[in-house]
Length: 318
Image 1 (cartoon, rainbow, N blue to C red):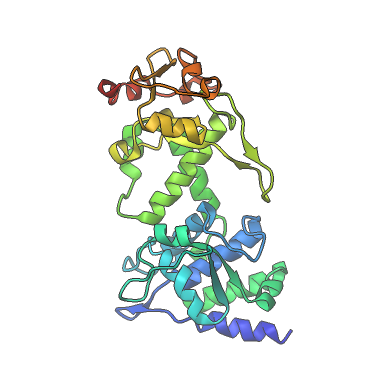
Image 2 (cartoon, rainbow, N blue to C red):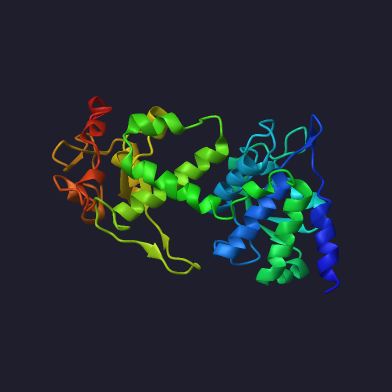
């Protein structure tokens, strides 16, 4: 087990930045989030993808364990990239997509990082060590003791999943006006998490079935079933900042584009209406006109149905 003391030393000697004498919590908070993913099964391979589970766990760790408010929990891109300088963390980019850095040598945004980076990975010997639950706890305790000695009693290993659960409940149960009071538009990590949870809750409410076509699309080629449908905002998020279930529809990607481009709309009786200016030159049997007047396939629970007032936004454009 000569690798164990080597990597424990690496974990205890992370290259962290400081502000007013306080170490930034980002790198250890991210490593704790990865360890939590190994515990709950959201990380199953040495290909660590940026998921809502990882983002939420990182956010929770930063908020729970920081000793002051100097460090915000919205800097996920920094540790995910800069851990490469600690000798055991590696990034694999999508083929042909360069990672663009700012003048300070950091990724320009979380969105760019997610677009370019396929996954991160540990050194293979470290990954093998982390397959053992007791060893994972040794690494976890090393991080907590070294970086969060004053706050380690506030550590909650299930805080990330709990945050996602609460967020999903807000989207399903709260009025839009109440939900919007929780949003921090300046926090790109929070925005990314909310977007992912919105998709998850909308597709679950519609039973992974397109509300217009009735297609039920799920990929089974991944470790967990992956829906191939989109969650569509009825009133665009840029206008409404509304991720509640009443502002969502499950649509195929093609019908999502048609809805966003105003080629079809939904009337007050939940029926599909195709724009009068729209023409199909060929393939009409597979086109949009077949859905004219068709009733939407709606969630079983009426409180999850789309709010009718959303259908009137921009109605003059049809």
